[in-house]
Image (cartoon, rainbow, N blue to C red; front, side, top):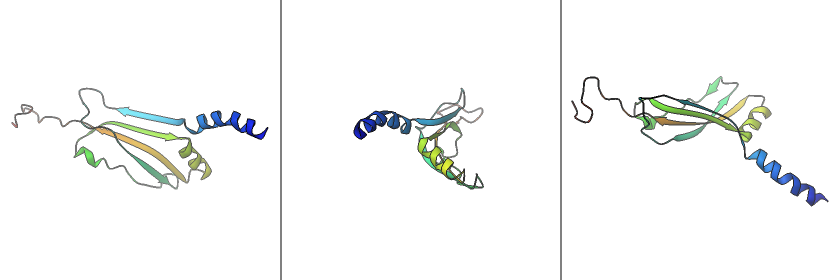
Amino acid sequence: MRHALARRLALPLAALLLTGCWYHRIEVGSPVTGATEYESATYWSFAWGVWQREPQPTNCNGQALKEVKVSSNLGFALITVATLGLVAPERISWKCAKPTPAEGGIPGSGL
């Protein structure tokens, strides 16, 4: 009896634990094009955002960002709820933009 109940609950529980909670995506429209693949990191916010580490997209080499994605999952949501918002992790991904040519210059010529 106990094993039958565990088997019935296993699939819904796995589906609940493996689903994402939310996802935001901000993308710059054309003519900006992406130059890099996504780079991601998990960032933690403490004391309701009083202390947090800012993402540093060092792979962009001073160029602008093309796209930023912020997402969470059920585990992150449970941590946030269990600590009443005192600790809040998020997954942040970004893609860098291609360099823009100098005004009046000819792209690729160095002029």
